Length: 612
Image (cartoon, rainbow, N blue to C red):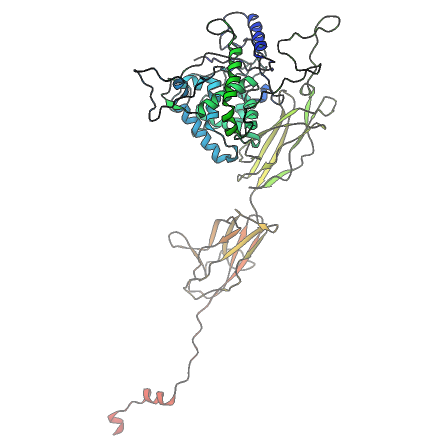
């Protein structure tokens, strides 16, 4: 089914009437018969955007979205049933809109549950995912998905060719969106390919990251919203998260209206039976041909936010009156620009070219003294990656977004567990990435730094994760280790590993009974361990210190050979400890002297023959 999404609105409207007028004027200038899949849809005014988010740095590329709003009455959940009535009384107002297709609803709840474990501080409510899914795709086109969550047909936004939309040239060779010239938003949560490349997740455990799968897309959306340490129980963080998804205040208002609506109650309905929205942000006339959806929804959206503001304060921890729309950015004259206002004609006629942005002036990126990137498994890299944006003549460029992406077979990530981070360059043109945290996988990986919004020379950094190591081993007891031939050592060997005097946990170790202090060959006599089958073994590998740096070896046994033997323990990092084991016969008890009377009694009993 073709995508039916409206434009994401870019600039703030002073009033909804102005917004409607601007939309109508833009619509009138377009050729009739524009379809949902066309890229030539009209640009739409009416939204206040965040200056920190560009289209190519958002989840959706600021692609179109549905503008339908929920009924003003609260939904009436249908407890105990997942199928709508086929006959009988008309459902209560709001009941239909409150229903979410079963598979889609399950995907939202599973994603929220996964985020509760992965990022408990984010406090992601599944209703926020549902609200975004409603606005982006009408809950995957009314739940038209298979049992695994994949949409029956691709859901594609318009080509982002700059004609009424952002200009984002192809980044995936058409792999996701089928377009090798320009990018398009893809799937039920409408990710653009360049964002999916780093934000994509496998939500249904099939080993693939598919933007057309609601489980994968919902989990990716959850992680996307929870970036940068956001706490979505705080209204300000919700606002920032949603605006980063689609940079439009009208979009935020619409999403929040559905969010509050779903929080009041919802229920599961069969897949494929969900209602399909009709209003889109690029459509300027309603079904009756009078008035525009944009103006109507902007007005209704404000009403919804005002009415739901009381609940928003409880959920978000923000202002009890709801979140106010940001004021328009000051224009050249110091006042807020009015969307739809004509551009002043320069003296002498003609048109003016927009001044280049800082991003436009970047020629290349340079390393800014990062140095060697090495860390032990589980540790934080001591060095932070620093990149400088420069013009063609080597001058630094401030206020440029640099995106850092961790690539390669590694579980290393930036602080917060993210594989990507976007940072603004400072006055010296330098952007410092968040601290890198090494995972448990050892080896090398790369971090790529690129300019957001430009295709210029980037910088690739190589980082190395080394195994956990110890430089010192000590016994936790000084009791001698002794045993009789054929016996069992009563005390087990326990050692503690440290690295630079700190506890060395998770360090690999090996224990070997060696022939002598100078001969590390395995001894074939003396003490031994037992394997699972009870067989004697004199080398143990695959040992690991615990969280306290302790290593307790299995019990030792002795064969019939007496003598002094050596147990050598080594760890990754070079720590070595040799423990002495003694096998000797038990000492005889002291012999007490026998009394003469006792001796006589024992050795010379009375005998009839002797007496004779």
